Image 1: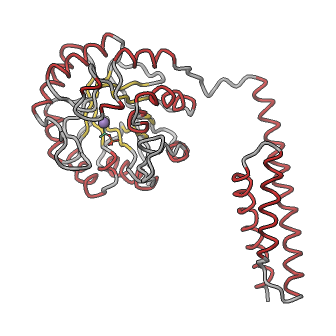
Image 2: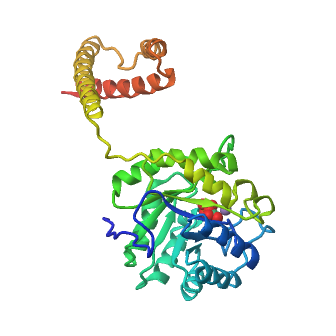
Image 3: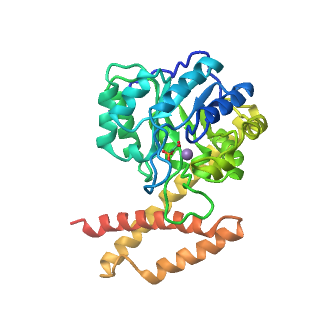
Length: 356
Ligand code: PEP
Ligand code: MN
């Protein structure tokens, strides 16, 4: 299904990279919300986020302040002029958030992974024109992510965006949620008109990772950032380790280097021509290699040999891996390339063997 999209058109917000949304993981108290909001507004932030209903991995944690907090967000809007955003996970959340005049809704990662829940939200949004940001599902499944966008779009909402917040993994070494950048990059290729934001806070899970992740997202042409910021991060009721103060956020944003895609200088054009040439040569060489592989296929057929000669295959992978390393490439990368080439050779030889 082709998405029918319109620009986000956020009132009072310039159409400029990065679009920044900031605020605490959770709305905790009226004071915490207002203090954080004022500090952010003073530092030029125009869109405030705060979770009102919090999906928690285990029961017993702080599950969000609930409806009561919506009034605080309303007060933030009134006092600071910022737009306000919150997460919705059920039809009731949608109803309450819209009633409170919330400007932007987002769908959380756990919800995106559940088509029943997304459909319920989509049905509740029918006929409403509000921007909706869809976080990636917890599992690295691009189709599930696009499916959620399609459901919301199918309900008539055209002002959509996506948020990359990383993917859950059993092994949490550096990141809380692995940033599998190729997935949002493929999303961009598939739906070029869809704005994509990065959530460095939930990817990193630690405040020291927020700055490098913001820069990485900008270098990968993301349109915006949604960052958790709290007036007193260490005392936050949820996600304390990954929240930064408004001052730190301001510092991070000021240090960001924003490169544009369109800066095609002559040198770059020349280098790109060279890359095109290399790629053409690679394809020609590959075609030549495949022709030889087919000849080998004919030979194997005539001599009743099996296609897969394991010894030879291992020898190729090992040799090419070390050759690659000598040329400054990761042997694992070279191995992957030759595995793919070998797979295609085998497919071509199978064609020869199966002929007649
Ligand atoms: C959040 O933004 O506070 C949140 C719960 O995020 P996610 O859905 O990405 O876990
Ligand atoms: Mn959070």
